[in-house]
Image (cartoon, one colour):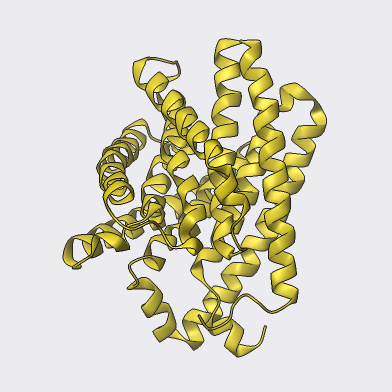
Length: 315
């Protein structure tokens, strides 16, 4: 990769790893539909690992060669929130490898958890000390929160106390941020077209929250129901806005569609496992088909943009 493209390699590219790894986990969680789905999930895990390693190399080169460009991203009111996509990628790969290699899964989780904690503290400090305008706030601010809620999914196997710490932190900050973001949507200017796909990030905290809570609590109770059905409601609301999303020009921000769809698919599959209701099995299949199609389209458009040198360019 030429130097100018390395300099402009965005940290938000790690959202691609999140989308693919989330899909891999979703396929492995629907093995009740057939063994082929688990095999496909494992294959996607290896593909995600390869891409993640490639991106780590590119971004490490950027840190080494262009530290000022990295610093500018780290201090940007929108781009800063995408740094936890790196730690989230570690955490998701830990979940994906949990049935393949226990030791690898543990070390991926450990690295991801430490990074997630450091990113969370830094970003919270940044939010508190920075003078923001309300228009700067957007759904990408949920990304650090989502990472925090993901930690217990695999972490419950290692530490119950630590899992509750991260889950509680993530859920409380999600409620605070959701209030602020929703206020911005209603009473201020609409999001720029480039950020419109980030609306889908709204699905991720309650969907991931449901999966994480079930992993910790091991049964569905009132809080679990609230998280699941609220995530489902957000999906319905966004489905009602489908015409707007279909008319959008392609941006790398389209990857914001992917992981939230993975998350709700996994949540629905988990709901089916817990309740045994055929309706949720049907909903799992529908959600998986939609998610696969969306990720396929976004992946093809991204590859086309890369070949046309429309990404990793100066904004």
